[in-house]
Image (cartoon, rainbow, N blue to C red; front, side):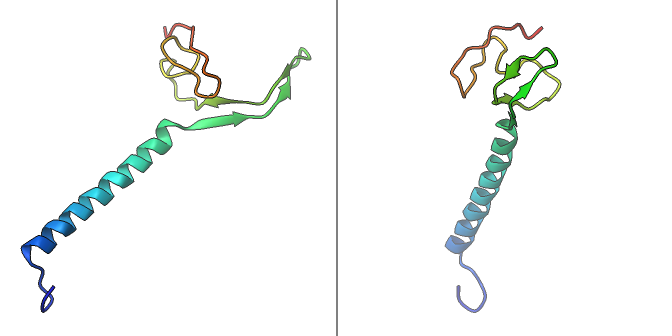
Length: 86
């Protein structure tokens, strides 16, 4: 940069850097929400059955992206889903 002005190459580099930072920020935001898992502590049911600690997908009002739904795989156990989404 000479005298506070940028040449064409410096302008292009700055534009590419801004686009790259925007893409990275968007990717981080999406990744954070797409893989939101909830840890469930172990507990005993009212019938006396102990349920071991585990992870579950966050509740979002749809069955199609639950790990137990047919076509999906639980990333912690590798078990394929068997339940219908409907």
